[in-house]
Structures are given as structure tokens and as C-alpha cells.
Image 1 (cartoon, rainbow, N blue to C red):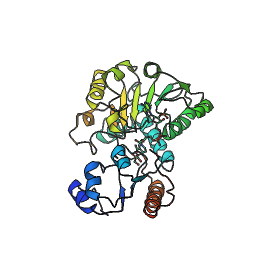
Image 2 (image 1 turned 90 degrees about the vertical axis):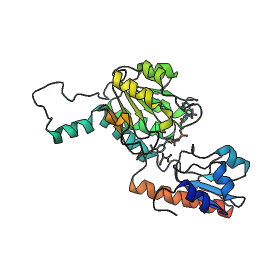
Image 3 (image 1 turned 180 degrees about the vertical axis):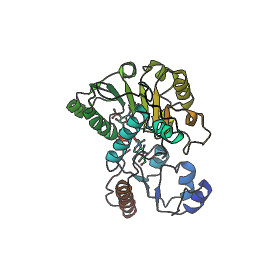
Image 4 (image 1 turned 45 degrees about the horizontal axis):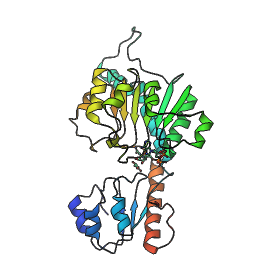
Length: 293
Ligand code: NDP
Ligand code: DGY
């Protein structure tokens, strides 16, 4: 157990002969780590719902079980997504900065104006556990239409009158676009030049899924050229984002350090679930949240 990020070299050394591995999403568990662990390894328990950092094909080949933490972080992540959307759309970080730096302008009507949810169309890419929880929280702000895109239509979208639409429809008709899908080979780089060019100039883009879903150079271009109004990101590539990254120079881009599930209680429940998954795997018994793949 380490107090901070474990280096790759340390992990490769310490994992040797292990029967179980409890990892974070920052630990890339690939063939090299699995080979270093050796044949004892029975279970990998990740402290996350996302599992794009796990080489599932290699893990499967070795007959290793996987535990993860779905559901228990859904509320916290949805809440953070709403906070990020509002902060981005209503320009909160920029406005707070103006209060501190003497830029507060009274007597002007358009200064610090942003975009509101009332009467808007919201598009969610990936209406899964978290996507649906985000939509449920956004609708009471007076959202007029909910559009969503994914691989399959969702029965519970009916409760929000959600419309399952092609991606292009979502892009051209939404005022707010929220990305909440998992990172897969299909979604990697999905938000690129063509994607942003179809969005409204007044639209706000929010990503709380994984950084690699977005082509950040194309996002920078879209934000600086006025192709889209603003972006809020809880996830980036890489993480941490270098402090000299161009996106951090933009007033219309709000970047958070991957804190979607970061409430004390949620992290506590995630820790407990990850530990129980690990123990179940070690003992060869039921794991409370086993990933079936
Ligand atoms: P779910 O599996 O419930 O939802 C994933 C969604 O992604 C599904 O709706 C799925 O649609 C959609 N999806 C998969 N492939 C595609 C595709 N090719 N195009 C469009 N949509 C697709 O997972 P969760 O909601 O629990 O979590 C989602 C992700 O959120 C995690 O994988 C993780 O990356 C991220 N996350 C980020 C956090 C943060 O701190 N920022 C915290 C927690 C999670 P379908 O069902 O139709 O296949
Ligand atoms: C996850 O669980 O996948 C998040 O990104 C971190 O909690």
C-alpha cells in the first residue's frame, strides 16, 4: 500500500507473487503487470467503476476475476457533473476571479452573461447509470428536451421523455452536451473536429467520462474559434494536466482534477466495496460487484 501514486517500477516489483491486486484507475494493468505478478494472481479489484485501464483480454486469458465499484459513486459523480455544467455555463470561476482582481463591472448589462438551462435542450452521450442520474438532476432546472445517444435505447429514459437520437441530431440540436459514456475503442477520440463543428456556437460541452474521449487539440480550436461557447472537463489527457497546457489559458474552459466521485462518504463506500471484492476473489467466493466480461 502506498500513500501516493505508485511508480510503474515499484508496482512491477511489488506485485510479484501477489494473489490479489487492489488498484486505482491510474494504474495501467496490462500484460507486463500481469506477467510480473505471475500465476498466483486470482483477483484484481479496481477502486473505480471505469475499467479502461485494465487489459481485459489479457486478464481473461489468465482466468483472473475483476471487481469494480458501480452504483455507489453514481450520485456523487452526477452531482459533480451538474456543478461543473453550471459553473461552466454561468462562468463561475471567471466571475470569482473578477471579484478578486478588481474587474467587477457594474452598470453593464451583458457583462458576465452565460447560458441557462431553462427552456434548453440537453444531450447526454452515454445514458448509463451516471448519465441517467445527471439527466434526472438537470430536468428540474426547466430543461425542455432531453436527447441521448448510445449503443442502445434505454427504457428508463421514458420517465424523462428522453429521445434516443443519432449523434448528429444530438450535436446540432443540443444547448448542453454532457459526455458520460465509458471509454472504449469506439468512444476514444469521439469528440473531435467534426464533432465540435456540428455543435451550436452557443453550446456548452461537458465531459466527466474519460479524457481520451476528447481530442483536446480539436477542443482547444473549437473554444478559441468560437465554434462552441464553453467546455467543462473533469477528466483530461494526461492526468494531471500539465500546468502549461493551452486549455488552462482559456476563460471559457473549466478544468477540474477528476473529482467526480470525491465525496468523503462515496470514497468510503468505494473503499469498502473494493476491499470486499478483493476478499471475495481471494477466497474464491462471491464478489459484491464482479465485472462480467
Ligand atoms: P455505465 O456502464 O452504466 O454507462 C456507460 C454508458 O456508456 C452506457 O450508457 C453505454 O451505452 C455508453 N456507451 C458505451 N459505448 C458507447 C458508444 N460507443 N457510444 C456512445 N455511448 C456508449 O457506466 P457508468 O454510468 O457507471 O460510468 C460511466 C463512465 O463514467 C465510467 O466508465 C467512467 O469512465 C466515468 N466515470 C467518471 C467519474 C469521474 O470522476 N469523472 C466517476 C465515475 C465514472 P449502452 O448502454 O447503450 O452501451
Ligand atoms: C471511476 O470510478 O471510474 C472514476 O473515474 C473515479 O472514481
